[in-house]
Image (cartoon, rainbow, N blue to C red; front, top):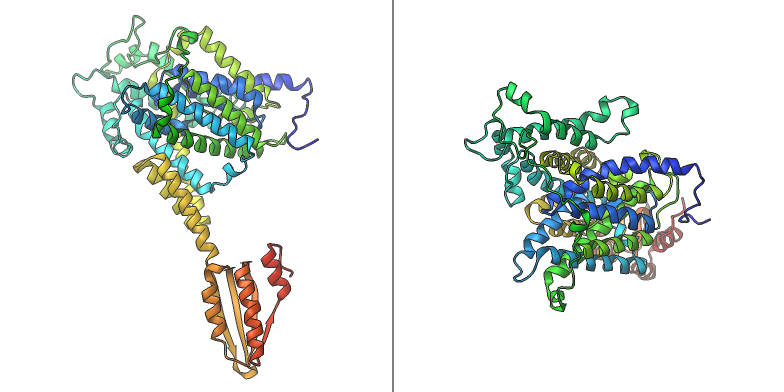
Length: 537
């Protein structure tokens, strides 16, 4: 049986998959809604993506235990695209996004069919981590303001710098403010505390309940029934938002019927394909979503002992999912590590768990939309703020700094550029810096000369990569050796030798020995370095 062949599951795995699917559903539901709202789209857009990620991609996936859906990492891309699309006259930004997502999906399908799945993984971990950190900072810049019922500045850097002002509004709301800053901040703070402390403090048997679900449920209860407590504490309570009272924090706005919310984008006309915005967005989404998905798949493979990922099949599955989401006017999707890790930790054995989680999403939003309409927006913003903080991964940056300062600098440069410019610019800079680092590594060759005058010997010790980039350095060192000497060239510190260096040494040997000198060189070791094999000890 091949490594990528999924074995036929025994009957005992059905219960495990069923229970795991419920856990993943509870993790996915608040994230689907929160990510959609963070993108400025209706909650249904995120839920539809979650449903497609479960029912369609879950069935086709090359990584059976990976769960796909809307990802926090794509919020920045979607928001930036929608902002740019508003400047295109005579077009609907959501329709443009849908068409762009269809093209991105087709790009992914093509890449998978051409067996390029492994190449999408060829991105430096420092670039990926820096990308996620930049995305995390961007999410915090917007969602922290949403968490206290405030309006976030348009620019990411301004959003980060004005966080103290947003905090102050929660303590001292402006007179006559229509927003309920204090009440929203209380719900947001409670939600973050639950997210951070739930697993460390609750009994083991309760850890299976996702912290995000508990945070949302507590937020609903506080928003619905917390008015007497606030009034008893002397807090200035804002107006109730409906006849049911509550403390007045804005709730999720959701359609009464999912069928009514599904609005296929239709065909906007061939001229839309001439827009640079559409093609740039399609390739960017395809690149970022594919890299995030396949790196997530690698992480999931490390968490279980079942079938390994077929990366090309996974890429095709993601392409199919994104194409369908584009047609339905939903959000782009990726494989998501939070949901996938929850799936594995909950005991999932086969792809049925991911498929079932999509079914539960569909049934819940179809049968119980009123429950979703009770969720305070501040709670979902808090979930995303906490997610953004985890994406920043400052402990990971410190660990990387201790291991490799150059990699840590690439991490920082990528993240800072994303915050200061945009996502694509940050990723491109990170890839360029990684390539330059690799180029510098393969262009570094240290040549150390040691003269033994008593025995008329010269020793040249080579360290680094002996490539054509450093050929002038080695040629100069060889030419400086006096004639008639015993020249010993030591290759112990050499990592790589290319054809140009090999030819230089062969030519120099003939010329040097013709003038009465002798060249001693471990030719077996040299050929081993040239052929890319391990040199003999």
